[in-house]
Image 1 (spheres, rainbow, N blue to C red):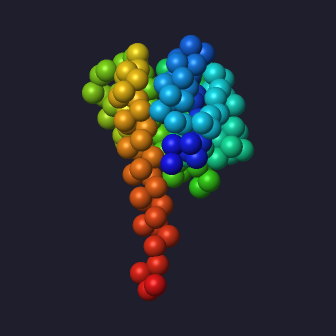
Image 2: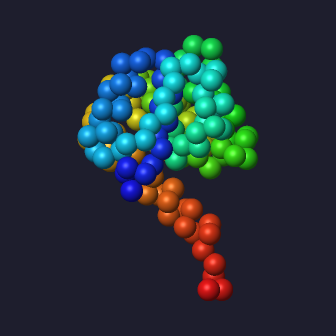
Length: 139
């Protein structure tokens, strides 16, 4: 399963994107989409159809919260699993991320093992939801 999932990373810090990709590649994930330009993120999501988006909250031009709001308003993107990333640790930030429909929340700097576990859990939950959505009770 890890190798098949398309993981998109949206972060204005290229180093964070690089490290995240290295951590996930070591865990068996092979398909990545990445951008450090928040305004192009939604168009890239539309084109690439990621299974999971790792989305930084604090970015110039458009925040991760704004991107997540637009994702949830778009029928093609509203079910895409999203893990919010930030150095902030305030309860209000976490609550806002959940209220906007984030699947999970990770604090920077990212811990490799926590990242891998959370990504795996979110993808497994998403796969289960997809299975239930397509389950034919009459079969």
